Length: 48
Image 1 (cartoon, rainbow, N blue to C red):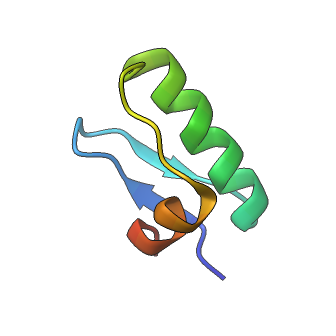
Image 2: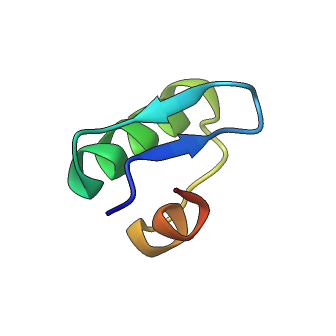
């Protein structure tokens, strides 16, 4: 299960499970990088 993602902006995103990680990553993208959008699958490919 992947629970961490390093955003290129320097933010480290974590979640207790993949669903939480994807939710937090999408919220981060909407707030900090509104022109970027990734699917669940794309986020999980970048996560570890």
